[in-house]
Amino acid sequence: MSPTANINIQLPLKILYNTDQIFLHGGIEKVMATKANYFASQNGVEVYIVTTEQGQNAGCYPLDEKIKLIDLGVDYNRSKSYFSGENLRKAFLHFKKQRKLFKELQPDVIISPNYNFDHYWLPFIFSRAKVIKERHSSRFFEAKQRNKTSLKTKLLFWFNDYIDGLYDRIIVLNEDEKTYVNSGNAFVIPNPVEHTNLYADLSKKQVLAAGRISPVKAFDQLIEAWALIQLDFPDWQLHIYGQDYLGTQEKLEQLVAKHDLHSVLKFKGSVNNLLETMTDYSIYAMTSDTECFPMVLLEALSVGMPVVSYDSPNGPRNILIDGEDSFLTPSKNIPIFAEKLKILMENANLRCEMGGKGMKNVERFSLEKVMQQWKDLFQSLR
Image (cartoon, rainbow, N blue to C red):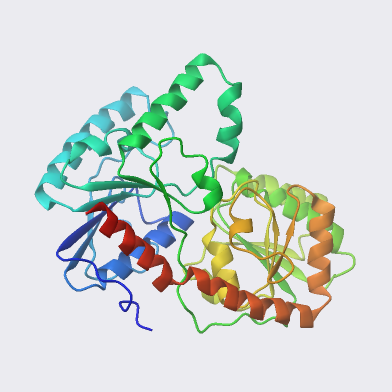
């Protein structure tokens, strides 16, 4: 089926994605590129991506040549607080440039897939457009904090709920996350995965993990699990892909040295096409503290790779089917996680069986089905 078969957007339509940058590897950037490319393929649809600090950097993921890229050149100082004098001045510049541009472009829909200063003024800046906020991170821990904080923090939560309510829709990625939206305008649309003809080589004695090298990904727990595995499977390797964040990798490498795992555990950096890289691996591993709807799990399933993942809130359980295409283990339980990895590592037939089921199960998140949901949303907002 062609990617245009299921969508019938009333034309003309201008869709504007509003973000900070598109040159760093990340799930938000990847899924935004996928959806922007899809919309750009529709007759009569114009797609813009407006950034604040792209500079002269090339985009990380391929984009349709019809997509128009505009950088506002705000260049926030990410080493300082948003509320520093420098960034407050930049925010004022951001507001002026953004308002002028939106008046010129006259977009029908503005989609903001992350949080920036403009989260607080986007609903006001251009009344003609429908304004949509996407939430790509879990609010699981925030929900637990709401009733255990100071009056000042509770007022901040109230203010954020008020701002959320001014958006035409808050898009969340699964039903669990919908319960954390208190403004009554949540709408569930999962991330899409594109069809691929690539297949993981499940005979490879290699396990893959990927993501920004940051504390929330809990790669330290994955390393601890591998320390429990390595003696029984000395001919297997674990490779971790991703960009270092705030020196986290150095700490992880110290843990690798502590367990003498240098020969079997490698940090591979970032790659532009993780899907192709996946074909050299037979198992995907995830130990994140929290995940909303990780693209990497969709991609792993799409190439027929079985998964071992923590049942971290709330993404994995909304993608994986435990015991069918994956093993979901209790979060932060390193011994159980290691045991499930061992089961797959020693059983090639089970890897093949789970991988085949995963390729079928992930079809419920196909690009065509997910973009039909976006079409339905646009129609409902007309």
